Image 1 (cartoon, rainbow, N blue to C red):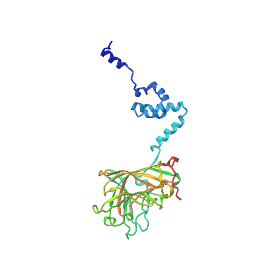
Image 2: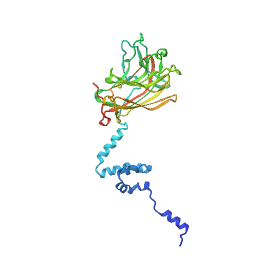
Image 3: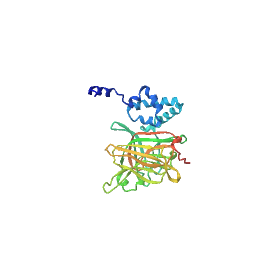
Image 4: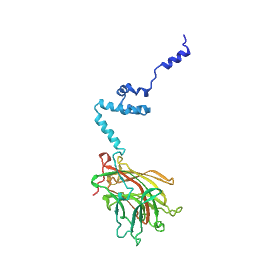
Length: 320
């Protein structure tokens, strides 16, 4: 005899349904964890928020049951440490954070002080051209030294800057290797040696005879300056430099290179995202800011995040 439609609907509603998200809660979590392969348990967390919320407790109980709790806890701590929680930071927002390095006898003088622009404190560096215009400023500036014996790895560098070219008639006619503003660089052993970092160079073109560009320069690789993006005087730019110590690429002389990603955003809406460069794998020994030729540079929100070198970071370039 045919079943009444109402009874058929009631029977359908009463039939049990397989709701994996609901099964993952309460008493069913342990049998599921015992039944599923470990990789499958990890995939379950992608099905719903309820599953994701429950997964940490499930893995914790599994690790305790199988005697792997100590190793799993160490793995959790290491994973969280990789987010940068325990990294050290150098904040270069105030003049007291830096040490003044005097210019050489053939270089132009410079002044450094703290000023307020649009309600924000920043460091202002004004650099004059040498009297005979034959020398250039490569020593005078502000520097922060780090202990070389600590074998520190720079993880991320952030800062804001803007610049003013004090003598465009000179800077635009000289080679880019003879002019430069708003340096933020890193140097071996803190003094002299080969250098690398970001700076602004004149970029004269037919369309814009007074143009400028932000470039990455790297004496450690003996390569030409590499363009990040075009920039303008008087515009503030936010810069993020991220050093990827976990990735190693074939480098010069049979070694490996350190990938570096640079992102820049200007207050005028211009931006570049994650421009990649390769640099040498050397420890952080100093950070410094200066102008190579006659200009005024402003810096704010300077932050250098770093931590000690670890085995998973790959080999360091040990220079003597």
